[in-house]
Image (cartoon, rainbow over all chains, first blue to last red):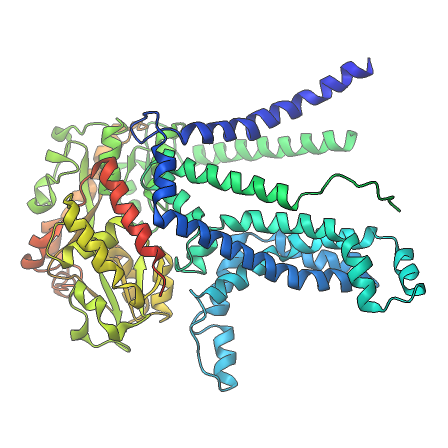
Length: 271
Length: 357
């Protein structure tokens, strides 16, 4: 009886997975083997790997995603660490998550106002005597906004990992004569590594194909693979090529998941 | 669980109530299938007074719905479930909709006043002999500049964009046809070119433009130019007329060596129900005084030559929006390039975007 009802409960989820996860993936892979005229071919992949433009774009995407992840991590880890020590940590956490409730486009437009030639930042720079700078449409503005947007997704898993950590480990480390830095390096950081890894996944993977921001904030001076996919699907209607880039991205993401994923437990006792 | 169910029920009840309310409201306003006209147009693209005038004259009730891109309009009509009697797509979209059988062939015996339209705007390549569409407004692609930062003589032709003095000052519209097209025009070639060497030369020339490009964006150009974020931009005349209205330092130039000529035309989509009302509205808008009033309100260029006679001279003599014959001769409508060359244009454009300063 219990077994039967278990199967019954799984039906909606199986359908969901088949329809919205498996089917789209199969379709993308399938599409990537066809030309615009609907003929089966491997040309798309050949074109991708022989074209300097696409390869440079791929490198670009990885480079920017790497930078975004790095900056987010550098900001998020200390934030999560300090957050965990505050009194009303749930409230602080809520305040950090709050911006994710606001639509991405709205946030991007707000940053246009802040970074533009007559925006807040430039008013300030002019006021302190540095003079107005070109901020919008630069690598700096793109990285700043992307980092800002991704920060909550990095803080959350790290915060959770820190919170789950048993404080007696820290006390033990102190008792055994380790200083603060040593305690952090040998105890706290290794124990929160899982949080860092899932944070890196949550940030790096979407950053690979950010494309709304590349236009709005980067003024298309920053080009990632997302731009190319959008163009192939909407403008050239070359779905085959668009799908090919999609497949390359998916494979890259799987590799990253494997690379940063949790290794099988080595038999270390938990808690 | 009980709470959840009662909540869902409450939401359903509210929805039903709103639906019935809306239905009653429509009936109270006298909107029924027979005497209503569903007009599907761009936002703020008609003088609302004209709609009232049309309703008073003919007794039809107009429902005005808006879209913000040709693609959005196309999807809504293609998916069905709508009953728009009249829509206003741009020329490339008309061509596509004709190909996909989404438009209804016009009955020219029911259209009065087509003679008011200037012959040079009829029989365009996207709709030969105007079987499917009637011109509403037209425009061009050109350069908009701010006279605070740039001298008038400095920007007259596409080649002026390459001027080293404009380093990091030029905003471009995010469109492959537009940007590759302007490079082709600047070399004296057709912007519908399918000659590989011409296209390669255009791409090569564009790579030299990179240091001057501040950003490649879309509708945001309007906001940036008004706020004086950049001093020069490549944009469409329709957008330009709105920018000029907001900031008097801005000026619009159509390079005389050639540029794009675009159209927004009336079409009757397959979703239409009330053909009489649709033809009545087309005829109403073809009347010179209505077309003139509309052109004054919207600020775009009217194809109606009788309306031109009524419009004040300061509008019709404005070469920013009604260029002289010499320039008109060099304007070209985008032709459908076929998927192969659309791909080529876009690949070159992508390559252009990839250039780093």
